[in-house]
Image (cartoon, rainbow, N blue to C red; front, side, top):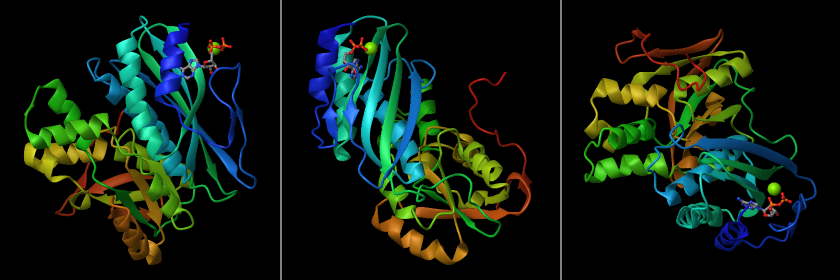
Length: 320
Ligand code: ADP
Ligand code: MG
């Protein structure tokens, strides 16, 4: 479509890498995978009004479109390298494209990630980003290796993004610093790349929490053919979340809210302390929230030892 738009994106995201033989501008990019590495690839699409509120700032949309993909690489223990961007927009909105590219580039820079190509079309505002990363053969983290007896841990805090969405939608506490923190967690999630790398060789299974803890830990359980018992009292919740929402609402957000992009992973009990020390050094920390058991499904127990049944299972776009 518009060459000037593509040029703007190219200039604003410029990042030199020796493994990019040919980037934006030809019919395809030419890339060199480092010898002895496996390529990890992932793609995620964000639709305006579905995955982000329509009035979200362009720079936040750009950041988030990349962040949600980097989070998938983090969950695999891969090092990010390249991205492709397919952008559909109702019209050639240069202000939006500039803001978008700046937000995208801000996050890309921290990983020296190069945008190597894409596609630009007219249509409803929809953004697909595909990312490529490297991982030593056989070392990727998957959803499949959890075993009964393993501890279940999660990085950072849970429920902040769902709370942030509620602050935006209900215009709650708009000028409050804590509400701003929660909205920032919604709009600018931090992909846990360093944590994913640190977990290689230690975690038996790993997933990023995009659709809510119960749903995503449920995926680990299905792939690993195990169950999980979670202690609600152990769920890590930020002080902003606890201060602005009551206990049961914040617990519900932590269990079922989407968009946090923390890592949920399992570790044999003897490695828990070492892994927690490693992740504490990386700034995000990791909290033990339960354990893997024989059987199937995720169960949640409250502080008094009662099993909870109410918790929603998480976000499903095709649910009735
Ligand atoms: P073609 O029709 O051959 O696919 P395009 O005009 O779609 O070529 O794209 C021209 C070049 O610009 C290609 O290298 C393509 O990868 C790149 N490109 C197009 N849109 C984007 C975008 N949104 N982000 C990054 N690169 C893009
Ligand atoms: Mg094209």
